[in-house]
Length: 633
Image (cartoon, rainbow, N blue to C red; front, side, top):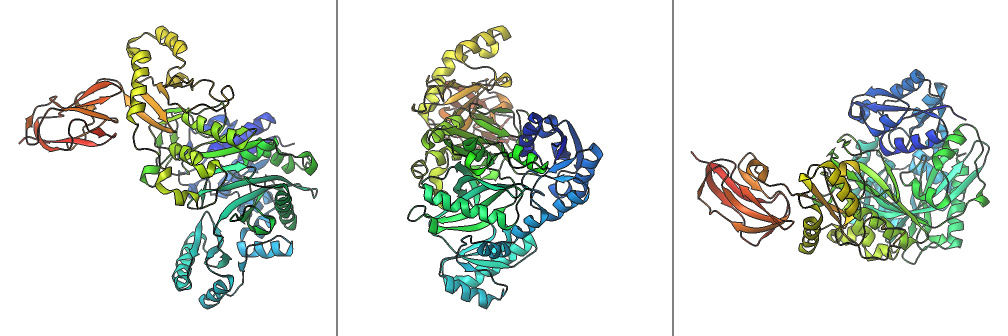
């Protein structure tokens, strides 16, 4: 067995690998860029080595530095995680040539499955069904156009070297083919340095189903059943689950057997995933599921497979890399229950899912389910890398209980001040089609804005929050520490800086929601008070921040140009000035009611009311401009 391991990755996957390695008594070495100098994976590893500046191309993608770090620290092996260099055959070979152990498939296997056209030809030879289309060498526009006609519209143009949705275009009509082809080729050349494409029949009700496979150096290959990754946004997975909804035993046997044949065809060693596309227009059927590609690494969504099989896939990777045979044979593997994973990102659904990097001042994730994360409170989400905060994984006896359990976890967690997609995830899980297992890759696009969370809390939720606030939190900040701790025990929560517990503002019991309640209760709104006196309220996955401290002067939300912004969602109860009126520093302009308390918003300096964009009774959202004051001349 290995004694030491360098992890050539960062974030939650590095932490995930470290956890298993530690349990196996394997010494771990982390690598880090400037941006990750104090990252969680660095703090958790036994040793850490700096490998360069923050951009990945100058650090995590520089193979020579990673190999040098392994040699410098005496690491025996390198685990690439996923992303970065994990599917780079040249890097894998360089690791082996340096006398180190590569925790992954053989370089030849990576190369064999790296190009989509060659991989499909190999799969055809192995008897694995592939999507109808064209895989030929002739890349002339005329030949590609004829093949698209022969395949039948709609078709999908895909970059041969593509991945992650890049270099991919759907074409519905022959007259649109030439422009789509040119666009696809330009993107493929830019992203992958290879403008070659293939043509596939576009499946109108597609489901993305993948099979986890595992091989060892002794010729053994097994599958660990299937996962469904159909819930996607712009070809990126959002929620994954195992097993696949609607999968009958005959279809499962056929698809899993095909996956094993695919792995054996490339002499596969280690963890890999065979990805299939299914035409779900008439349910899942073995004759309507086709090979798409193989991922020659551990997948982001591997925890759902671990949850239903009881297998630690990272442990298997390390054992196989050490030369051991697979720990279990096929007949020793079985499905137990259902698991669903949601990817929690620092991104703003209201702004087109733009990343929302920055410091995480307040973080509480519901650890009654499985949480895979690479950050803790007071860490930062870097603008240089994928903005994932955590993967939340719920396991239960049935799909519906697992789904509801995950929804409860989203509603009993909070992240601030970063924007996250937690509310979007909640709405996806609550969507009737998803609840019924009627999922395909176009569901999110069809649902559109219906899956976007509300921009602000409803008045009913505000009223409930206010009732609990006035009863439990009144004068909280004025109490000494012992009294705060006493009240914390009485009210079922502790200060955010010291705890990960929340309470339910509707009195339904935030603590213990889960296995003790059977998930058959209405959702409540969870909240906590921070050590700074802010109140965080989570409703349907979205965290709202309230400040119960008096609002005066510059703290009222005035910005440099004299604009007065609403510091929180609320209702305007009074407007004290008129447009054109002269005002003095500190003079009250408007009164905002939130959490059943009134906040006077005042003039930041002497001046004139240049704009007045609000009236009594108006509901306003956080950040809304209410008044703008210009300095008097």
